[in-house]
Length: 158
View 1 (cartoon, one colour):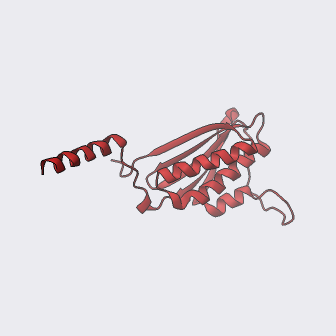
View 2: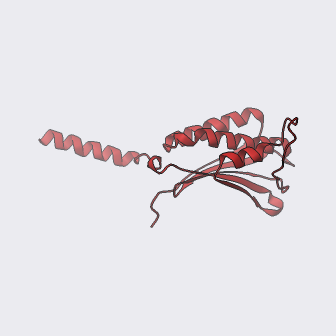
View 3: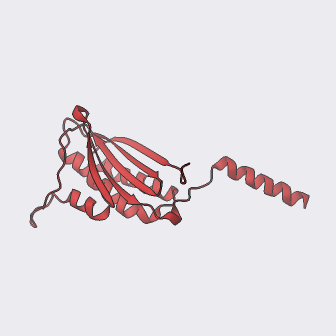
């Protein structure tokens, strides 16, 4: 038996600067819906870095899929692109204006990694622990209506 339900959201996009902000807002809204507000800043920073890497480096195109999944108290954010070239964590020179994305992801996440997928590309992911008090998910809308209807009938009778 799974003690906490799974939640999943996926968005396919072209990793252009204007779209990165939209995806960041989608991720933030989804985390608010799942009552994971404490993770919004970390997840937004991480997804921004991963999408910026796709925009800057991915070949032959900038098409990618962003997925967020909540499973058993852990939020995983992943970005799949079509470029099989694997990213590497490196020490950026203090005067360089780039090259710190994976170091930032490593700093803000519980864990991260890369899953090569051969000629179809790769998936870069990071995970954040979900605070147990906030893992409770909103009730299913149909169940909430039934509960209110039962309460209304009970009040009418009593």
